[in-house]
Length: 239
Image (cartoon, rainbow, N blue to C red):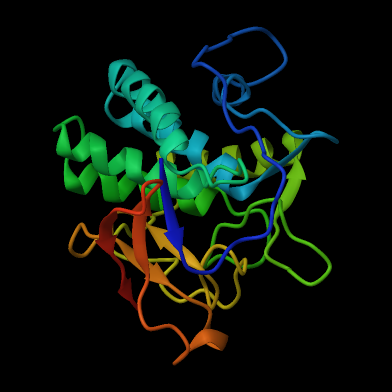
């Protein structure tokens, strides 16, 4: 058990994201849609968000590019990573868990770095449900927090399928070198973009990194990760 002494996020409801891989070829939908339906579990009101869609699209892209075995490996690792990215209030950071899973597949030589960049770029683009194409948003927004992107399952799958078909046919080219989330305009106060962000493993140096809200600039001396016995595990790098 670990705790971080920094900014404490307010409790939010948990949102389910995926089910065990199970491809269904029954009538009434394309193979793409049937595959995705086995992964994306809509919330109340048949709503899905961009992070959930992104996580499932990563698996679909891996299946298409590398094969069933790699897709199943992603699914198994993803379920494990979600536990590691679960906040104290039970909310799972789906996008972070999905990206962490991709990194693990590269480390295991299941994917090359180039393949990982490609599936992430394609899944990121196909998961967009609103006009903000520079970020992936979840479904936990509020009146004062616009960082929410929801759609019905049918609409989300149709949108994603349309773009994926263009990608697979060569009509749409997604540049994997472009970091589409490097400069988000807004964000969830708990999930970065001028708000709090906690990453156990950063992409740059593999160490703990903590981003604090701009409003706290100059007010925080350091962020320290400790266990329940108050033993220091690691000091965060403030950004």
